[in-house]
Image (cartoon, rainbow, N blue to C red; front, top):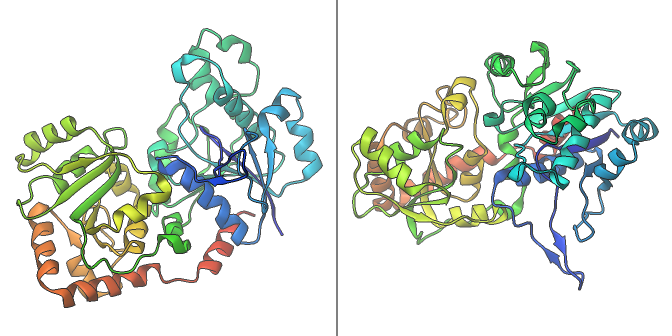
Length: 400
């Protein structure tokens, strides 16, 4: 059994809370990053690995018994990270990527945890593995030169090993084009250094289909005809959202929900795509409730951005939407190799869309032809029918 230590950049690893009465409370995160972290850890466990989670552990955290938890801030403050690694003799360090922001420009637990994380990356005696699901982050930015050196309190951390000096980190990414992915990493001046041969592909986009809670029966009376949930990815996805979710006829019920800027999207739709009828806008939804919300729709259009298209990145959203039994259209520029639906001729011709008119025509076909709708849903479900246990074992086997 492989023995793995797991850290996460940017945020705590949290599986929920336990109140004073011992009652479990679901995690309340509304972004995918923490949900992804939990999913990756569960995959490693299901694949047969022994997991120690090194994070900022709170007293009221729910701690699943299959994992060990260690407070990495305590180890750092006691100068024990290096000795802890020697004592535990881990086979690998697994780094879950994330965005790191110094809120208000001041120190605090989040800063100290990430200082400890970077210290751990430098001190780990064997190979670290970076799990790269979110391509917007590209890779790990160095903490000292990229962030802390610019703060008035930064000087005291100057010699604390906060820039990653090693170049042996293996990057596991769901981008199929690993050469382009490597080039994007190499162009980032503040990023860690990696070798071309150490950027490798693994289909992390499949992990939403590992969980029974994400699977739903056919919704005979969906509330929406077309639904999107998520963010604008720092504005990078704004053009695609404006292109595919604005301008529908009055009889097509469309909603966007999540952390979205309605005014900005409406203006982009007006300037670049002729405006037209705007969708409804809903609020954020907890990550654990995402598929349940998606199930309220007939269809969804999976979109990405330029980085996704350049690297052959398949979003997790494809699998989330299919599990939710929602007709999952895909922007044809996102999946030019037809990796998702290329196995079936009907799906290959029907599921890839180019514009609003294309989507609207197909939605109307589905609403008027139940036989077509049921056939499409049945066929697309084959995408999430794979050997789940083997998938997790294959993932663990990539961590040598």
